[in-house]
Length: 321
Ligand code: AMP
Ligand code: MN
Ligand code: MN
Image (cartoon, rainbow, N blue to C red; front, side):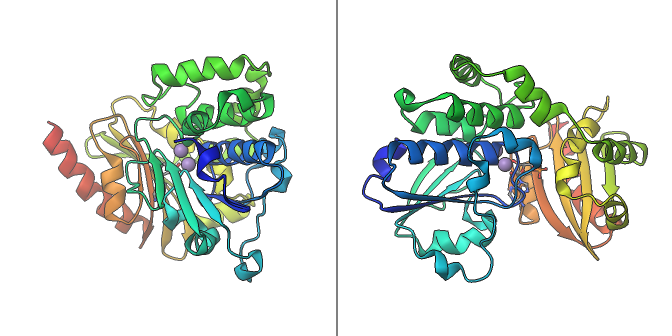
């Protein structure tokens, strides 16, 4: 699929990514936004996302993102084309209404849980990231250093810096092509991926200190309550990386990390080393993701959430034995 051809007749184009956008979501959306603005300067292109983390300030035109889709979405008018990235339409948040009303819808994603919610779909579950797919759908001749940086950031974030098993020879080949545009990749990785604020490190410390091993050490669990988040004036963005650190614990097969979003509500992140398909576990609770990284939102106490999840995890571990 080439995106230029798919949108050539449109006068207005909307782009949206999932709620609580991560590096891949931000990178993919920004790369596509920059590309479409470049090749079609006469078209109206708008990007809708929840406010991205400050670390992505280094991406050109990130301040052009429309972060307020709430209120009267009708004032935005109906788009000729709306493109959903790194999610199916259900997790577009407020922008889902814009997607639903658009003349033509396109969905580009790499989640196994995505069954294709667009009129045109480009779903490749083998791709490391949606950003990698954006590289596929844009013309290489039109690529420039700013677009390359956005795609690179996206790939870096979803592969844990080319480390997770979703990194393929193709991912590396694309990475090499992107580097040839000449930007400080080392600084980009350091500033957007590894560097943490003091508060982020404190929260990571607490999550590690308070973690527990269950299921004979096969699963590690940790949670951050709302009171702690409030105390540090922290948000979900400050917990990025916590679940992957927990998942590095020797001897474990999977990780459950959750933070409280309401009285009896938790946002749950699941990670696996391969034996457990956490996307399948998350899908029982209306979430989704990938075999080794998935998420969902669950209701109940901490113990309810753990009990409900371990039921499915145990079943899968038994099957794998
Ligand atoms: P997280 O643990 O939130 O970083 O998510 C891990 C992976 O699962 C990411 O690829 C997310 O996009 C995906 N994911 C997280 N929550 C959900 C959800 N509620 N529905 C579908 N996919 C999700
Ligand atoms: Mn994502
Ligand atoms: Mn992704």
